[in-house]
Structures are given as C-alpha cells and as structure tokens.
Length: 198
Image (cartoon, rainbow, N blue to C red; front, side, top):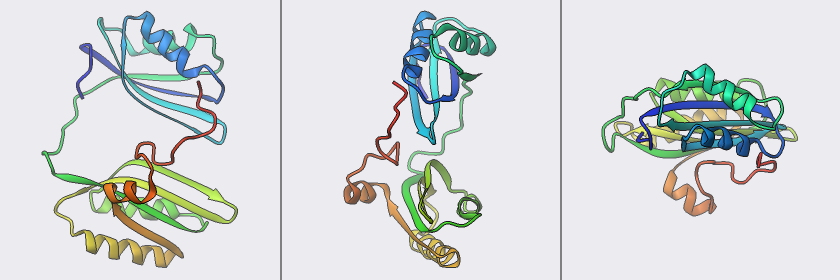
C-alpha cells in the first residue's frame, strides 16, 4: 500500500476496552510526526483490538515505537506490537473478486476450523471474519477473496454440502449483492459495535 511517509510500520494493539485507546495511539503517532495510513478496530467480549498502518518521516526501531505508544498515553494496560511494513506481492488486477460467506446453525466445536480449512484448500483468502454465539446458535460471516478461476456455482454447492454436514445454512454472495440486500457496509462486516474505544 502507499503510505504518506517512507518509513511504515504495522501496529497491533490489544487492551481491555475503555475510552481513549485510539486517541492515545493517535497522540503517540502524532508526537513522532507520523501519519495513520490505515486502521481496523473491533471490540469482542470486552477486549479491544486494533491493527493500524502508520508511517513516519524518520525511521525508528519497532520496539521503540511500541514503547512510545505503551508509555506515552494516559490509558492503562495496552499491549502493543510493532513491525516494519513489508511490501506484499499483489495478485494481478482482477485476479480475485470479493464475496461474503454467511453460515448459521446450532453451535458445535470445529465450525470455524471446517470452513477455514475448506477455503484455504481452494486458495481463498479470508480478509474479514465475524463469528458469535446467540443462545445455542452460532453465526459466522466472512468476507473472502475468490480467485477468478473458480466456478462460483461449484463453490456454492460445496459450501452448502459442508453446511449440511454441520447442520448449518450457508450462503455465498458477491460482495455487491450482500451489501445491496443487507444494507450493510463491508469492513467491518459486523457493523457498528458497542464500546468503540474512543
């Protein structure tokens, strides 16, 4: 990805959820003269997690960047990991399309394992995932990138059969159709959350 400054880092922040976490991270980055180039954040069962790409005008050691964020704010209990952003190999333009897999049924061990194993076996990348229990039921929503060589109807049939084996109802929809029919914004797939960390 293109960043504002040359020296780019990936930050991962974990904490118990409370107000001011994003502000503290942003303050630390700002004090270094840096820029937040991309971020994704969620709260799950009272725990806050954030992944962020930041870039700086001058290089710093990842450990120093982590220490600056952990010790520079007024928030408590942040765990911060930093690493240099490495260039990634991008698939060719149009090599994959984004789809959404939804699955729901009675909760049982191994649901995420079985679906993720199937997708990995087809070289399908999961780029966002939400799973959660509601009573005895489990809902799984995944945004995936499917290489164009795959026949979508065959994948739909495979996933439906896997769902039947597990007692789940499974749907595979193109991202545009999912958004249009659910009136949701993909990324995050699971919509607004309580406890934003701000």
